[in-house]
Image 1 (cartoon, rainbow, N blue to C red):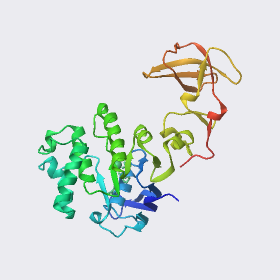
Image 2 (cartoon, rainbow, N blue to C red):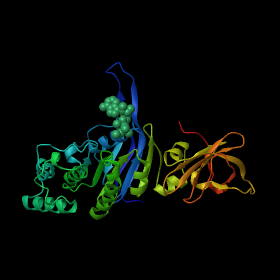
Image 3 (cartoon, rainbow, N blue to C red):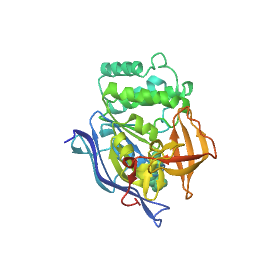
Length: 330
Ligand code: ADP
Ligand code: MG
């Protein structure tokens, strides 16, 4: 049995739109999750699928309608947010603009009145170094770069040494060039601190690259949980398959672009096709081919391969690379 630090057991949350006479809709439906202690766990899903609501229930800012949230084996549903050993890094960081870097980081400590002053100073000093903010402790958020602001938000949440750090789309406010670098830093920070991270994101690449385990969420429900490799290689539903990377759909079978081979020579089981369009992606290209019969397939080709629009080709793939789905997920 996994040493779970945090468990959600069939957690449901329904909101009423438009006041008392409005319609009710479930933002989160029967969500169950178990996070291994010290792991990096991601909750991945499109905008509006219930990720933030799930985090807010864990933090204690929303109350579940039913189900249970269990931290270290104890149900925490009756505890106020400040009594829970979880802290949140909010999507917009929610830093105090009038406080300095140090003031922002110390804020949480003062609120909870722990630990002793000497301990607190030592913790803050350690985090300033760990997050490369030393030398910047007197600046205010307005005098920091986006990446630095994010590190202050991380430090402010980590200073309380939570059992679980909750991160709501932590990279989305950064400019795309910074995102990859900060992504690596986040993973490194999680390893060094050994704190369990629960990140929610709509970015599949982020979830795949950072997580030890992850869950894919759709319309308030968990569709599949597993390692990134499990989910990518063995998606349980069409939704998971297409949300995690590209997929060609033919006759109830899915085939990933990287599993399709393109050739000028016919072979057993190959299909006759013609090149319709070529998209250069740098490290690879995506070649769209129109198969005889009309379907368009995307094929990922290696750099250096040269294909021309309009030329006749043959496509093939191994049957072991076909993904079949028994039923469509609602
Ligand atoms: P995500 O973070 O995945 O984008 P959210 O958890 O924010 O999704 O929202 C899930 C659903 O719940 C959405 O349909 C959203 O409009 C709705 N919702 C979230 N918070 C509230 C609220 N306070 N009142 C009513 N509906 C809400
Ligand atoms: Mg959200």
